[in-house]
Length: 428
Image (cartoon, rainbow, N blue to C red; front, side, top):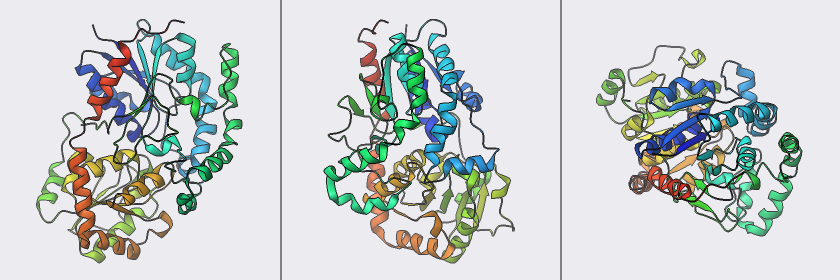
């Protein structure tokens, strides 16, 4: 009999897909995975034959202003934690505890960084616990300093080294001690040990931390947890997915197009992205595919020219290999898929980890970064022309794609998880 494993996450499709891939990989090995996440994803998860359990808070994209506040670069992540996650912490704890205890206690809990209830449940129940990180910047390493969305200009001081960044990050993290009061309060009520840094150091499992990305974009650093394993990206292949006949016909009708996408979350706050993208493609005389999501505000105002096609969605794993360049927001899921496809990218970060992901792609020579405030057709055309006409971008991206295609993130992560399961689970 396989082990019962609960995987829990919160956020966009980029935050869900790695755990879907991992859950399906574990199921193929005979285990019994359950994914605990927002009710919003119930149908997606159950459609691929995985067990689902809802945990709060749920997510919604109907409140445009709220969505914009949570994705704003300077304070978006702070608001997500303080206004969405922590007010629902007790509900999250109750829901996740029920998922762990469903049909008898699970053998293992695997959590994403926003699931602050996971360390509490691990300590309370004694369940074996594995934490994960989806992007290298989440480790906030002084040896490999991330580009921070609230103050991206600090990246120019990268050369000052670890001593400077240790002091800087200690200073920047001080306010988070106040944010995490709800965590400390819940732990006191449950008679658990006190903690000092639940947002950063103490969100890492002492047993195993899985870094679910490739060594190509982030190598272990001296200040990462010693128990960290970099697995490679656990790419999710949507079962039965394919390109629509309309999209396939368009792709077959000419040269590889430029693909413009804002993922599954930022697409709800696109603003002028698609209008400027259409104009940039026109200036370049290039074909373009726009993934515009389901927000009616993203529909082009005028009939599209024959060299441009707009569709709500297409599986990135199928579409990106057909592109010349991918223009996207820099979410880690989209970034990984573009790199895996071997295509250069123009990254337009909106917030969160996107600034750092973009900087890493740029340092690899596989793309360029253009700040959102400069996203205008003339500037976009200049940036894209650089990547279309300078063969170094295509060469670097293709080489990276070949390396990523040799990695097996799901296999490496599953091996490490099974090794953990062979160790006797701690008792309460």
